[in-house]
Length: 300
Image (cartoon, rainbow, N blue to C red):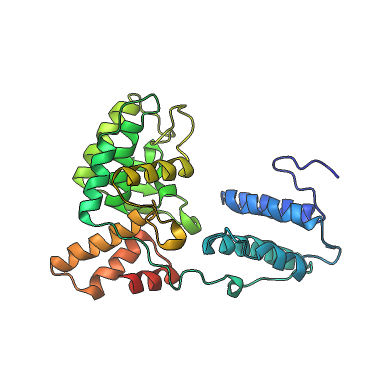
């Protein structure tokens, strides 16, 4: 069997997978995550008879939920294999089309951890007192955590920010190619802006538009989500807040986004905004889809 090199499909559907990837790139899609999943499907397909096309057996095995998967992971697998199936049907090839009813509902009873205002203050305090080191954690985390709590961004959106994506004068983040390939502008407050400007002076004395704003100490790469999540757990421990894990409702890094929504709603209601007006604003701001909107309404 040919060695599976990066970017090369080697299974029985290799020519179809290559065609799909090339088509999506020509259409302007980044397609990075989908391409990774299609390589996973390519490796799996070697154990199946695909002479008749994309079979139900292969698709079912590919989207079958693994014990360590979140709902979103399974949904991504369904999305990727659906794109392949629809591509094959357009080119008069046989393919089984999975639908999203295959996705296991894991979030019905899930309730995110909402930090209290006092806990948020404690998290910021511990971040502000990180001892200086060669990894620049004492500069990075005080700013990043204020962005997460103060703006409600997904951590991937924050870490993918480039210098050109931040309008310091207009106080706006330009979020590009976020979840579901959507762009949006997100405003930030004066207080968050001050921390961003301070960070920029420390880390980016020379402006390069394509540099990651939250660049790692190597400069040409951004921080990884795993690194940030791990250090956040350490900060929680220093605050005396037990990390319960996602399965038990947190607290974990993504809970800062949920906390932003709840504290923002609390503030709007206190200032006289009705539920009917406040909730749609939060949905648009955070770019929640229909399913997430219903879940957030239940939790709020």
